[in-house]
Length: 153
Image (tube, rainbow, N blue to C red; front, side):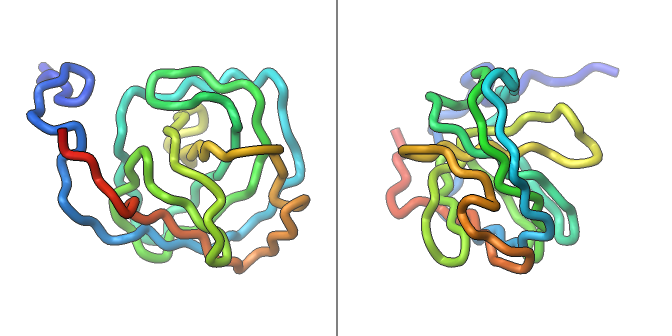
């Protein structure tokens, strides 16, 4: 089977961000994690977007490193797993909030465990804290929302 060229990897689109508006992706934390890694070697896939379906479960991982599509991330803290309550499209740069407080920006995706789940990497400022250290509990809401300003170069 022949596959066409990816429009993002091959810079085939006339805008860096193809959408003008999107719904937030809303989830509920179902498992709080308490571990970190110094040399994890997460290889972020080159794609800026991933669609997630209602009822899927994915893992959220935090890093303070310079992270983005195609980069490798080593120093991480695990936040937890969440169940998607309202599916949609995740996009690198989305604002990520837990319990209504912004924690960082979506940096990319690691597919080590896919199709079981996707690792969703969030770039944060400052010290890395695990989900336990942040005081999160199962049931807390997590939201991925469109940034206030979308650049359309």
